[in-house]
Every structure is written in structure tokens, then in C-alpha cells.
Image (cartoon, rainbow, N blue to C red):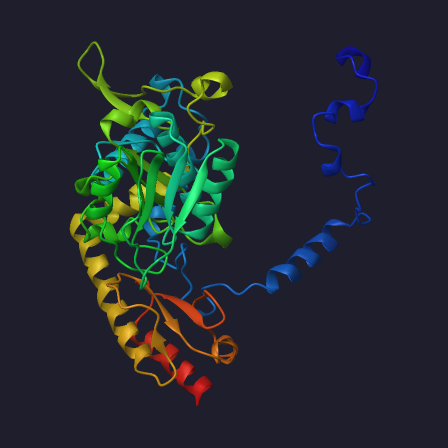
Length: 424
């Protein structure tokens, strides 16, 4: 085989891999195990995990313990959704294509933008892909990114920007919110989040005005649930809205898989990554669904590619549209109002505890940081022992507390009591 491909050794096949990155020793593989031994080993490892079903979880920071109605599992478990591959042949893929189209319609309505794709991998890579779209659009050399954007999304954008020879300038938060960034003619896009990583609802319109005045695009990484109450980013002039779709009918599942959503203005749709399902009529006047504007082959031909995204998280996105359909327009508003009310109660309740103070005073929807100076380790230890995960640790003294519809007033009181006990 080596002679056929024209190389002298197996090592020659890896000549393009830098030598410092190659492993110069055999893999340290353990001796073989029987099926029973493997099962026992994996069961032991699994037992070390703590499920959100086994504790009261206030952990958020991008992934949330939300309620998934039984209807979602019932529909996405149907064999026709589990087994199909890419719907290149529309005549035999109408169901899958219609599901994509309905999903796109819902995302367009949520984001306030006219065009959505059929989903991408997840939230952080959606932000990076949006950055690449902006680069292709205006050819500029720098991104300005609020530190209110999820850290994983910023890191994803920085990783890809390095390959594009572009700079990423971070803008520090001021009292939990993004201050007015400096935007010049070298800025390709300004990236903000709504709400931001610290839970604050951002004032986006002034940022949009400043960016557009300098000819830059605005990318907004949005949480889809709060858009039930907040003004749609597209209605505020945002050019690209992306985000993490896990809260739409997808469980935590150890951090994945989920799906990312991606919506743009009409002027940008031909540079948008991934698939777009369109609705048309056949010669007999019957409604039909097709893949439109883009095909997978465009993204395989690297020299002409607009993206390396050539697939969709179709099953996870299907869960998202089933969930949104189950919830409905009024249900989404009611859910967001519920989150606002319970988060306000939790914020007031925790801030009333001696030794606990709010890390910022911006309006929030479902998440907020608190500061517990010098005692956070003791609080975490006591909460874990009490069957409570109190939130995501931001720093030595700060904790990000997330509220979902599964967290009741009694759960919030239990968290407050545990913190009081730890600080007493």
C-alpha cells in the first residue's frame, strides 16, 4: 500500500504534521478487559457523576436545567427523524425539510431577522461563524467583543480569528453591562450578548448605531427564551443573531449535543453558513420543500467555501421547534415572565443575607452574580453536602446563580438557608 501511494513509510503520511506535535512513543493502552469488566468500570465512573435529577441545581452559565415536555421525546424518537441522512432528494425528504422550514420560521420570528438557516453545531461556534461572515462581507481586520459574551464563544472566535490574521479586542464590562465600544473603520463587527454572561439585559441600540456609523456589522449572541419579552435584536438593527439552543427542548446531557441558531439580514443570507430549507410549489401547485441557495458541495470546495459548516444539528433543532410549538407564543411570554419573577425573588432573597451582595445592579432575566467575600469555599462545600448546586463559580468570591422554571420558590429558600447556615 505504501508503494502504491508513493511513500517509503507510514511516518511519511504524517509529514505535514509538525514533528513537535507527533507522539514519539507507543500509545499507553491498558490490557484488554472483558465485557463484564468494562461494564463494571464504566458503572463506577458513572456513579461519580451527580445528575440534576439528584440535586437542586442553580448552575447555568450557558447550559440550563430546563423542563423538557414528554411530547419532545415522543416526536424526535420517531424512526423517520432518527434515521434520515442529508435531504438532498427533496421528493423523499419532505417531512425533514418541512421541519427545518418551520424551525427557521420560528428562529426568524424570535430574532427579528428575515432569514435563518437550519441550525449549526452549537452556540460558541455560531459566534465564530458569524465573525467569518462579517470578515467575508467587509474584509476588515478586527473584531470588538464585549466580555459579556460567553467565554467559550469569545475563545472560539479568537481561535478562528488567529487563522484569519485578525485581531480580537475585548471590551470589559462596567457594572455588569457593556460600555460604548470604540469602533473605527478597521472593525469588521462588534459582538455583544443579550442577556450577557452575567445575566444583565444590555442596551443594544446605541452600540448598533455606533457600529453602523463606522461601517461595522453587529453580531448578537442571544438567549432564545428571554426573547419572549425582550425586543428582538433584529428590530434594534442587529445584523446577525446567533445563540445556543439548548434551552429549547434539549436536556443538559453532560453539555451536549445541542444546536446553535443563526439568523441574518437579507443582504447577508448568501454568505450564511449551513443549510437553508425553502418552500415552493410544484407544477401541480402543491406545496413542496427544498434545500435552497446553498448546497453542501459549496462548503467542500475549500477555495470557494463560505464556511466549513456543511451539516445541521437537525434532530436537536427538531426538538427546539417541537418545544416552541408546544409552548406557543403566549406560553413563551408566560415562561419568560415566570423566570423574571423568580429571578427577582432569588436576587432579593440572597442579597438580604449578611455577607452576600449583588455583583451588579443591572436588570436581569434568569441569571445574576453574587459576591461572597472570603467565604465562598465554605458556602460551596455546605451547599454540595446539602444536595444543592448553588451556581457557577466566576472567581474566588463570585458566584453566578441561574434560575429556570424547574426552580421553585421553595428551592430558592432552601438555597438561601444553606448559604445562611454556611456563613453563620
